Length: 352
Image 1 (cartoon, helix red, strand yellow):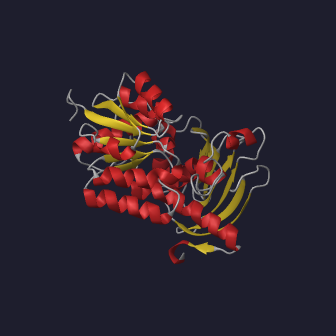
Image 2 (tube, one colour):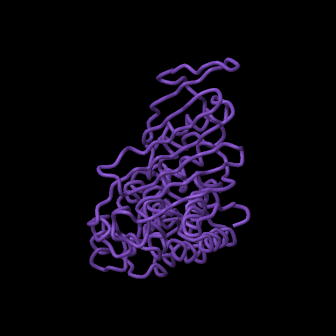
Image 3 (cartoon, helix red, strand yellow):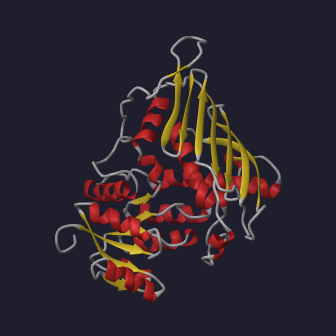
């Protein structure tokens, strides 16, 4: 424990997302931020000073070796996540990793195995899973509100300028960003879609190119999916739409439709009649939480929820709300989409 009896946190990477981790740690009654690491010393020391004079480390190996750091918040570029998590695990430190988990299947295997072997927790940030509306939709599907699922689609039409990609050397690169519109921005929607329907992907066929931006990776991708349940689906992920649209998830079953725009439910139409036409009901009726899907605490949704959750997971010796095995599913699908776009063939997930 830290000196005051709280679990000590260290943040690796002092970029934009680190402030969200810091806010979550400050809001958690059982957590305390004790250290930060950043390769840019000026930036790291500034973050440390703004965080109440916490310790600064230039090397993440030194941060995870700090005896007062029990949980590491991983806020580095995507392609560095596995290295950070593995170092933490070897030091006996738990990790909460910003999305995506990492950018290759090999690295995700290594980091999950390292945490399992060391007996430490590995959680991931997908804040959309923490909203009350998303939880309600997941439970409705589990309870059969839509009947047999027929279509499950995600439309993620974002805008990012060329200046955005030029603002950091790792953006829009295969090595450090792991991909483009899907891996960086669209991964949230992909994760939410898979989590809501609680179904695995059987196969995918896709096209992906950089049509507008001068980057290595895709700014536009489309994919058709077959789920194990037999349902079909489509994915659209872009940063080339100007000015961009709110992300949408559209779920259709033989007994109804649920649509989400962002994290808000915008349509809920169901029927209990055999072969009946679904009727809109808004706001939708309350759907009770099931299992560990409901809120873990009174903490507001987002990073704060997930910081609080993994802190309690360590104290209670349970799995975090989004464990590594669950977080990797969106990345596995995105990588299969890239492989399909590269080869021009359908990718069967079990055979790939």
